Amino acid sequence: MLTGLSLRLRVFLFFCLLALGGIAITAGGLVAGYKRVNDPALLDAYVFSGIVISFLVLALVTGVWLLFDENVAKPIERIAAGLRAQAHAGVSGAIDAHSARYLGDLAPAACAVADRMTDSAQSAAEAVARQTARLAAEKDRLTALLSDIPVAMILVNPAHQIVLYDSQSAAILAQVAHPRLNASLFDYFDRAALEEGYARMIRSGRETGVQLTGADGAQGYAARMKPLGDAPGYMLTIDAAEARIAPDAARPLIYDFDLLSAEVPPELEHRPIRSLTYCVFDSETTGLLPHKDDVVQIAGLRVVNGRIVEGEVFDTLVNPGRPIPPASTKVHKVTDAMVQGAPDFVTVGRRFHTFCNDAVIVAHNAPFDMAFLRREAGRTGVTWDHPILDTVLLSAVLFGASATHTLDALCDRLGVTIPAALRHTALGDARATAEVLCRMLPMLDARGLTTFGAVKAETGKHGRLLEDLT
Image (cartoon, rainbow, N blue to C red):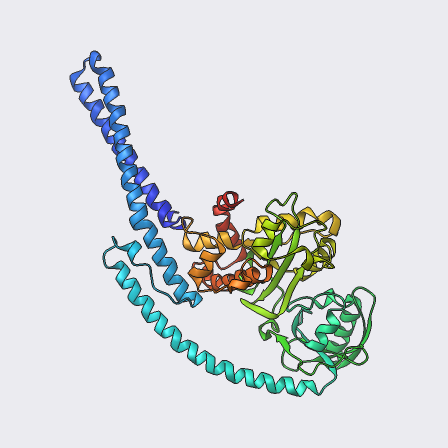
């Protein structure tokens, strides 16, 4: 049972047991002495002595526990978190040996292991860089070939979730909602037509035509569905000219082929954390009071299969309908002139809700940012019932509650750099939070917190941190 508790909590319980044992031994000794003397006149003296000794024992044990916690338990936690960051998140950096100076040879040994891991990681990084360059060249050749084909192309898995799309198809999808990897095609096109066409394709085993209607009912497309041979899923193609989409010479591809064979996911609580889709966001506001201040900027990125999807970014200014206080502008640099003509929060809130569809929402100090979204839920007509993770709490799980959990401290700990010009901008902070999340996911996995339910249960133990921040 104790193995599920943190080291510091186990140490605290040990000293509590030590204090109770000392008091019990003292009480037993005094009782034995009183029975031997058997003088009622001395009872008050024995009781008084017992109380004084008990307080002295408590004071002594508390003092020793504080010293032990500060100089042994906390440094061990820091060393463990540092090694885990290097081993599982690819973070390079020295172990803080000074804080562990009372741990004998443990700190130097940990530093030696960390140095060896850094050397190994650098060698691996060089090999990965070479392979990445080769794959990038192949992708460029594929992109060049696609540029000559005036057809919008979407690869879809058997669950009708998007695995790949190019800029042509992105333009078509964007007519209904923001294009997103792992999103359901039913978010963009009428379900009945898709399912009917898919059934005909499966029966025939050949390419089949299908007439699609946009999910909003405003567009119609003549499309074709083609099976992928031995691979699961299918390719959906739409004539770009018929869809009135201008050909894009660049034709960048957004894809994750791991999604191609994705099975129907189990209940969220049991899903692996690395397989989840996350929407990481941040907002800038007119002030720090969610019940009366307003959003002036909001940005989000999507993380799929543990990596940031570079082409899927939500970033917009918001017109708060009121002057922005100079003190707030000094922090986030958003001025009244910048938001002039920007959409209001009702419009932005609806668009951002779609961007976050079917994703776990992630933010740093999430209750603050979510309070602004939920306050306007009535006006926007959307419900923010998404599952949520908070990087403050994830930091507490991995690095201990006593560590500093600001975004700057977390980035420094995990080797994430926020350009000075982007700090305290919605997109800059959202990007930093997303990079931090991607580095923490394998660390959580290594701790045995492999499912969403396990992570939520563990972060729930540190909820007081968010109350203190608020």
